[in-house]
Length: 331
Ligand code: PMV
Image (tube, rainbow, N blue to C red; front, side):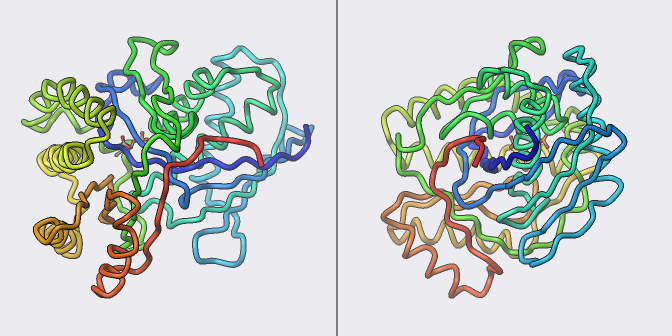
């Protein structure tokens, strides 16, 4: 292997992962599930070089025509991950690398850019170290990047992340193929600015919320109901659960210490608008990741109407229409 190009999707969680049992190996406090996004992905071109001293990365951000050098922080996350893989898998080989990374969507704005980047990188490291891993094992490797939700970008379509009890048992798997159900995630980008607080710091404070434990107690039942709604293709039931779960998740964020207020005034306006749209007969539901942008969950027949509606509202900077997508792969 010299140069390979890997594409990996971002994913939107229907049940959010929040809080870690073990931050070193990124063992989550709860199971989570998501859908891979067709229009939000990272492509990385990874070149393996023999000199281990060479560790370089260039990034082309959404909306930019040129690459920039990565910052020291960005590169450090990659080199720490590389060393972690060598240690955990007891690998003797050392090599250098040149990485070029391109995002099809704004990064660090609550659209899981670290999930798409680190799952793509996990694949590239797997190839560079000549590891032969199953999809489940690759999801474990992606989880170990530090961005836990990266594991859910590896398998195809609709993905479940099993909580597990140790490194080997906490992995992601596909519970339905991309064409299993025509669910659409319309990302309403209200602001492309990067969020101020990373989710790593957020996970650490999760247990300080007085609502955290009741959330944990509720989640197994919500997971069961959501899975049943999915199996029955019952969109209203499914969407209602997804929206309630997102609000439950943000109640924890807002009440943890220090609090995480990701929403802006525009976020609230969109949430209210979604309720109004339902009243007038359009089946659509909101979910929000760790950021201010809103993901509208709907079915294919409502996409054109919703895109027109929100483009005309003056609230959005960009609208990204996502269908269920395959997971991490080489292109
Ligand atoms: O993937 P991490 O470790 O950066 O955590 C992010 C988790 C959320 O995106 C906020 C929720 C989720 O399950 O996707």
